[in-house]
Image (cartoon, rainbow, N blue to C red; front, side, top):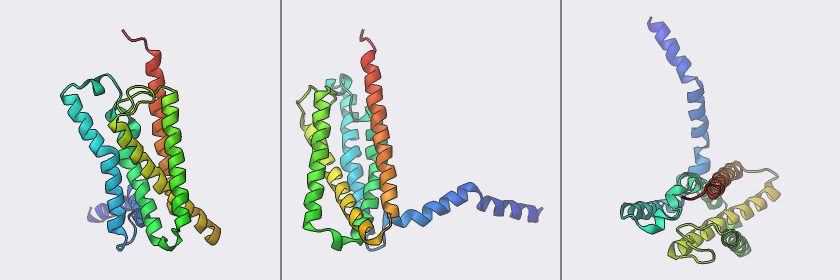
Length: 217
């Protein structure tokens, strides 16, 4: 009886869940970095979570509690899967992965790399907001096309920060690939995370398109 229980325990420890946890633990340093870089990496993750999701979620909940028309008549942060799961979970992990990678390769972060990243971040942020206005995708940050409120300004600064940060990560990864002739695992993690985020964003847009087809009573 005891031998059977021990065998069952051993089998459980070698099961798919245990193997998955071992796989995650083996790759945790790719996201969390080394002991030296961990405070910086955790700061980046926490800043992304707070600035991208937490503050907006608190404001959203407060405005809902007081029945403010901004959230009762328009889509707000808590109506977007890309905000809840994307800004609240996916992007913090992606940015932490980038932080761990960039910290270990600080000498490769040149002035040219920083300016290139800022230019790319500005281009992506500007393109997103122009597309939003052109297609009339109004929400609590842009109540009417081409008119952003303070929430829209905050979101634009947040997006500029994230896109510039990930652009810097991309620039350094490209440099590393040219030298090392190998794609780093951190780049794979970041790519998967960004793909998931854009998938969530696409679902939000599909949801918006379907809502526009429903006649309002």
